[in-house]
Length: 174
Length: 358
View 1 (tube, each protein chain N blue to C red):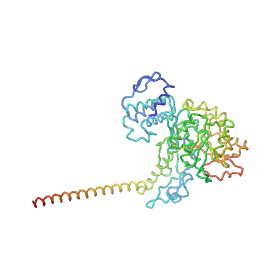
View 2 (view 1 turned 90 degrees about the vertical axis):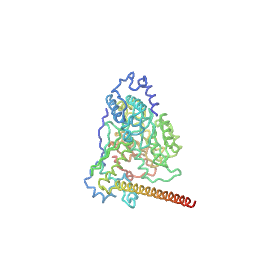
View 3 (view 1 turned 60 degrees about the vertical axis):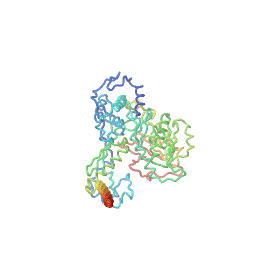
View 4 (view 1 turned 180 degrees about the vertical axis):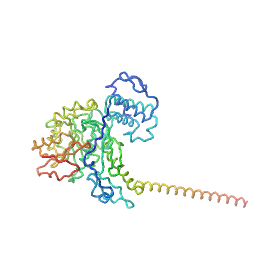
């Protein structure tokens, strides 16, 4: 029987930060954990909108479904689900998308990052902005396609009517 | 579908199979709950989970999910397109699941049943008895990559780093390093012929064969290392050596004892035999200030620290210990201090290293 139990990941991830997220935003550059390298491009973001804020590892709590075995070589487990919690917001992401713990951890962070963005920024979040932009582009494409279709229709009508006019004239001239 | 080859091997070793009809009674296997008809993926997972649980198979649900997902062409159940969860399966798919599941009933590890497994996102072929890469070992590779990134290296004619992996098994460590370090080259050694073959095959599957040399080699044999010198001094030695304490071997799960190469696990009396051989050999092969990264048993940091102190002739320092994702001390970083004394330990601040006393 699978004796799976949650095993909490130790410090530093489980260090609880009681400082509100709002405060953290101002201090953000200094708080990024050494593991997450942020390039200047990421920080600057695109010209039209800020980049998605990276998660602070000290505000995350990570759990793995792990048996009570010795681990390492002595165990061969395939359960590699990662449960990641963002403490300040209480948001939780569960990821079992890949067969690799390492990949699941990275994916969980990415998904959580977006959820946190939506949670705090709502309508102004990157996720929502991207959605609106995509929807807008879609509507524009539809509109253009419709206009092109109508133009073609008008041209066709024009062509047809000019043909019938010519036909009448030739009939008249007979 | 690769399951047929596996079935053949399973049938040769397991109970004989009579007839091919779905639900026919196997000679030594009583049929379980009757399968009512066409089932979908979700129902099939429940069905097999219940059977595995009844038979005391560990990770009943995970095993069932991986098998069903695999037959439906996905790596994990969660990554299956949701529409596939509720579609009825074809008789052929049901048959495949049946046969893979019967292997699981024989306690075959899921990775051998599927014939493949992922390591840091790379898909690798798995074949018994070659050691199956463990999830902890992904962090060993992560650590090596972090250290390589931090260290500015003198750009030689061939880029670098040049890495030696001892005990390559399926090639997991070597191939992940190669795929993340485009300038690197690896010499991968193993004493098992099956490992040599499998690493070669995986290297080819991943198109990394041009930067890896795979060499049969037993690190415990005196003097066998001389020919490794011809590749030149190395930047790094990496290994997940056999490190299980001999007295703990018999407590390993049947999945491991019956299917994996025990020589890939048994580290001798204190699990130190292969480790000490690697550490004895490394200074002869490493550049000055070259590094050794090892995965070990949680009791080893202290044992290795003590052993290195008893061998000052090796000029090796234990510079850092890193914990795995379960919080157990699992990885060691040992550095060779060359004739010009290497940097002091605190000059290399890596994420979460624990200082080893003394």
